[in-house]
Length: 211
Image (cartoon, rainbow, N blue to C red; front, side, top):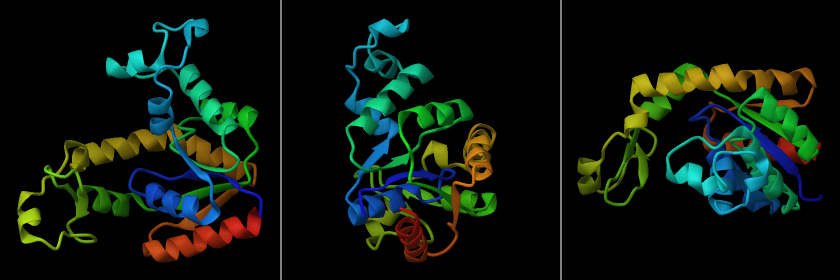
């Protein structure tokens, strides 16, 4: 099998990071995320794009959103350097999905399907060790060390109110992307509420069958 070009979609908490890491290892492809692509191209010259700043890093250093045109250019550059990839975190809206079609031809579009109730349960149960930055879950992945458990904190973006707002934004922006690929007959739904190993078994077999 040639190195596949994979897009993985799913709401925050659906398990995209976990499954992307397994895909990267199993199929020897690059894991491309918008965050990593932006960090790796902070000094990219965008002075010819009629933007406020001349590099993506200037937006990032000021805590401002990087314009879509710049994100598109950076993702395009990252994809052009990869023989195979799993793309995670892009496209976030229909306009970006249309841009992506001009950048590359995808072999597989995966969607990790998880209910909102389960997503809220997963995200609000996450806890962080402020000393190490390690992430745990009160139910699925508690720390073995009682001292670590005692110092765990809930991040501000994992409170129920914030989680529901994040899911609402995802629904508004990215649901049209899911419908777009479904209408084209390209979307492969995977039950993301299974145990991680079972999700992986479905993801792996889907990629092998299609790519």
